[in-house]
Amino acid sequence: MSPGAPAGPASDLVGPAASDWETVVGLEVHCELKTVTKLFCGCPNSFGDEPDTNVCPVCLGLPGSLPVLNEQAVELAMRIGAALQAEVRPSTFHRKNYFYPDMPKDYQISQYDEPINVGGWLDLPDGSRVGIVRAHLEEDTGKTTHQGAGGRIHSADYALVDYNRAGVPLVEIVSEPDIRSAAQARTYAAELRAVLVATGASDGRMEEGSLRVDANVSVRRVGEQRFGTRCEIKNLNSLRSLARAVEHEAARQVAVLEAGGAVVQETRHWDEEAGRTIAMRSKEEAFDYRYFQEPDLVPLAPDAAWQERAAASIGLLPAARRHRLLALLGQDRTGAQEDQVQSVVDQGLDDFVVAAVSAGSPAPLALVRASNELAADVGAAQRLEPSSFAALCKLEASGELTATQAKAVLAELVEAGGGDPAAVARSKGFEAMSADSLAGVVAQVVEANPDEWRRYAAGDDKLAGFFTGQVMKVTGGKADGKAVAAELRGRREQQA
Amino acid sequence: MSSGGRPPLSRDEVAHVAVLARLALTDEELDRFTRQLAQVLDHAADVAALDLGGVVPTAHPLPLANVLRPDEPAPCLDRDEVLGAAPVVEDGRFRVPRIVGEAP
Figure 1 (cartoon, one colour):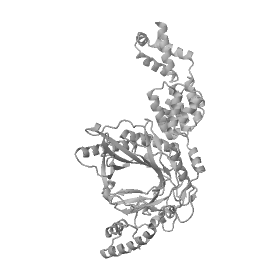
Figure 2 (cartoon, helix red, strand yellow):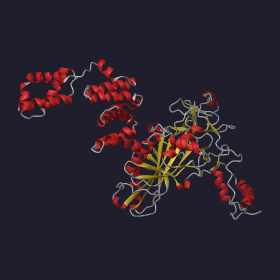
Figure 3 (cartoon, each protein chain N blue to C red):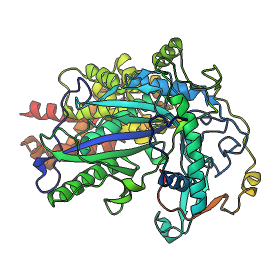
C-alpha cells in the first residue's frame, strides 16, 4: 500500500474457497496524448487515417534521421503528473531494443530509470486510494494486423503493418499493487480515464485504443504479507474486459494453488470471446531489452515556472466536479441522483448543470436533462451552448414548457449547437397552457367519460392515466402531465 | 589489466547476446568473439576500478537539456515512395512474415 492509503474496499470473492484468498492488482495504463504531431517528429497524430500515410524518416527509423522531442507532449505529461500528485523530475530517454515489426527502428524510445513523473496517488469515488509509481513518456508502436487463419496471433500466415501510430506520444501510468478486487480495478481505470480527459491530455476513447490497460494480477492467502507470483494480462480493451479478466485470472490462480500447484510468472492474453486468459510467454522467454540511453536525445528538465504553468492549466478534476454537483443538490439527494452526478461528470456534461443552476433552475431538473437527454449523444451535446441549455431548463422549471416539450426543444438545440429555446418552442407551436384553459379541457374530458370518472372518483387511481391521456389527445401534447394530475385530484376532492 | 572484480565473460553470455542480436555464430566465431569482447570489457573495467562516488553520471556528451520542437505538423513522405522501398506490400501496408511470439 502507498503511504497513508486507507484500506481498500472488501475483496471480490473468487473461486471455491474464495474467502481465504485476496486478489492483488497493479495496473499499467497507456494513454495516447492529444497532441497535433508525434512525439519525435512532425507527422500528424491522427487516428483512422489511410495506413502508412503519416510517416517520415524519423518514425520509419531511416538512417540519418534524428528525433526531436515534442514540447506539447512534455506539457501534457506534466499535467497528468500534477493531476496525480506526482513529482516532476529531470528525466532521460532510453532505447528499448527488441525485434518485432511494430517498430521499424527495432527499438522503442521510452523513459527507463529516470521518468518525468515519480510517485503520487489517485483517490477513487469509493473512498480508496491507489498509489502511483510513475508516469513516463514513451512512443507508441505501429499497428500490426495478423492475416490468415482467422487473424489469430499464434496461427497467422503473415501480418500487415501500419506505421501511422508508430511514434505517437504515450504516457504510461504505473500504479502500486494497491488494488484488491476486479471492481476496484475497474473503478480505478474509469476514474483515471476521467482525470486524463479533464487534464486535456487524452480523448479517453478506449474503443479506438487511445487508452490501453495491462493488469498485473496475483493472489495470496488473507493475512499473508508477501505478494504472490503475478501474471501480466494484456489485451484489455474496455473497462468490462478489465474487470472480467482480473476476476477470471484470480480464480484461475486460486484453483492452481488450491490444487497444490504453483503460479508461473508469465504474460497472458485475455481472450474476450472465450472469457479466459491464455499463456503467451513465460519468464524464461521474457525479453532482454538491453536498455541504453538514447544518444540522439538530451536530458529533459522542465524548470519550475513551466511545471507551475502546466499544473495551473488543468481544469477542475472529476472528484472536485462531483463534489460541486453534490453540493448543488444538497443533503436530501437520492442515490439515483448521485449515480447521475457520477455519469454526468464522467461524460464531461457537468458544466451544463452548473450553468443551469446558476441561471436559476433547480439542480435535480438540470441533472436529469443532462444525464438523460444530453448524454444520449455526448459528442453533439458538448458542442451545445451552455446558456441555451440553461434557458431551456428555466422554461421547463417555470412550467412554460412541459417535460415532453422541453425534451423536443432540447433535441433541436443540440442539433443546432445552440439557440433560443423560447423561439424553438414557438416554432414548434408549443405554447404554455394557462391554468384556466387546462381546467376547461379536463372538464370537457370528464363529461365525455362519465363511467371512468365515477370509478376514478371512487378511488381507482389507475384511471388518472386514462384521463391524462385523453387530455393530451385533445391538447396535442401541450398540457403539462403534472398539472393535469393536480387538476384531476382537485376535481375529485371538490366532489367528495 | 584489471577485471574490476567482475567474473570473466563466459562463452554462454556471448551466445545469449548473439541470439538477442539475431546473429548466427559458428563455434569458432563464438570462441573468437568471447576472447575479443572480454578484452573490451577489461578495458572498460579500468574505469570501473576508479572511485567515482562524487561524479555525476553523464547523460549526454553535449551540455544541453530541453531541446524541444513546437507541436506543429511537418510534411510526411509520399506513401507510394515509402511502400516502394518495402520488399512486400499488401493493401497499402507493409507486409511482414508470420510473427512468432507476441509484441513486448
